[in-house]
Image: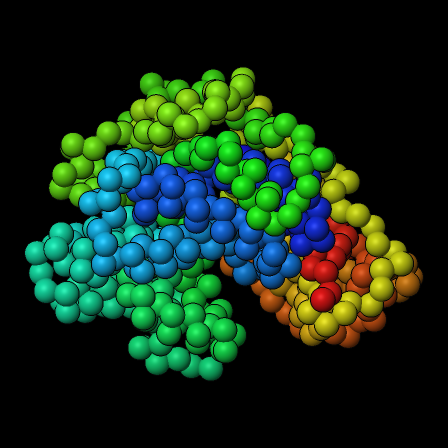
Length: 181
Length: 310
């Protein structure tokens, strides 16, 4: 993996139309973005479709990346994740699992990292998530990692959708306060 | 603008991903018309995005690159074989060596669906994948084995991304002292141009990233690999330009937080800003008392344009 600074340079070069830089950027980041997207979509064909759209968007809007506001990998992962969520929400009427092509991939839980291996930002966020009630910790992490809708979360927690709505809202405000945002 | 709790929650849930399709498109419309709201969303995406450090890497199929290239109209002529990033991971951290005592703050082990036990571990469909060669094969197999190894892998990616200084010597990215191109005859910043400088020392990764808005000339310093300033000391940022007789001009103390933003550069000419060297020294707490630096620069760099004016 390249350093954030190297990724910043690559994105800067991509903004100027540098195709070789784009290829290096793709090589350095595709597996991470694919891992993020596959967890949410759980189908290889859809995940690759989203990754394709993501890199097309990165090629076209690399100039909009501001290293003062986000890390390069977070910026790229946000593009990929948003597309995956958009897709999964629009397709929610037909259950992904029911389709014949559905694949059981990327269903692993997120990999636990040793605490000393985490970045400060991650530790801080996890400390704040850790202050939520246990159920709500899971609620937030399931939503983020698996891209679950409120309905899916309601089914998992055996509680009305409106309750999930309230929990999510409260949780995000608590996290915000804890992070000092 | 101060946003209501409703707006803040909308932004947060957009980033979290729990809005339904209609609410998402509502939020997207707001983001496209209200840059401040877009910034609130982006701040949430940035805060939550660190969670992706714990998601393992999985290789997509090799044909995907061809499809992306075709989609953006890149010709295949200049395409070299894909070179994967050097990944000296298995030697560095084997699962056996991963300390079991340092547990994560939150137990993530049971947040998969109830039927998770019936699911296979990370598996990549390989039936329609052409054989990969050498390093790629290795990378793929690394990414698809046990979760402990995947955890180590992700941990290392996290390290290299955010804190190169914590890496053992062998794994540290090579020090780069000449990464900043000098643009002595750069044209004045056009509207919307963004300039960036990596401030780094003689060895080790970049310590700070300096970003300058070409229009407002506001600058932001983002802390990257710099160690915290010692007790009783502060990092201070200086502008050094031959157009100003090479006398360092203070741009102020860099705060202890991740970001420091200031409008001070507006006082300088475009030419000076573009060609100056930006240097960081260690001063007494609160900064140099007499407007002159008291140490050799520990980190320095020059600006390059990162965003093409359009």
